[in-house]
Length: 296
Image (tube, rainbow, N blue to C red):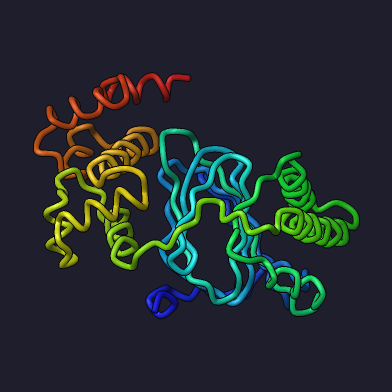
């Protein structure tokens, strides 16, 4: 059921570089320059969230800094600095940054149809999807691939292919070394909680209550409160406040919108209410936060 609800993300058709202050992404279709590597990118975005989707290739993600969560076919995982995780072709997955720390995520899409021995090993990766890059090797290889793609120096394509294979083998070795199925705290996330999470990230607003959500998704208030707290470790109210605070910080730093406009956008009852909320949870007023972080 989960796969049917998720959006299919297609493999890139053209080679190109996509770059902004929040993301760098190289799209590298299999049929052109590289046989197995589809895309590689990095995001730096405190309120990053990707909705449920699936695709026909493997995907590797590596958390360089910050904290977050993701689901694979309804199984819920938390991730933090140094964690890497894999999704397989056809698996429905989604994820988001969490907390106040800057969030930086490397990601890479790849196909192993021409590398059958490695493909078998990747399909063998079981329920335990989160592993630590204990010695920083994975990050180092990611950085080297980025450098080669950016500089485009002599034989850079050959070097990228070699680094890519080194990355694939290194990851398999990491998973193989801890194949005792430690579970890494994974637990099945109910479909109604997944729907609530998707809604909360799509509709970041301060006036949402647990009663509104229970009515929206036809769930009893007590059941929703209990399930949400059990699976995510925080109450719905705490989660909504965290989303609103992260979104407010983003709008204050990345746009020229006025404080009153941001208060309206996040559905606070007044600019005064928004200012009190922001100062209580960040230690600064909205203007103090903006001035302090944009004057550096």
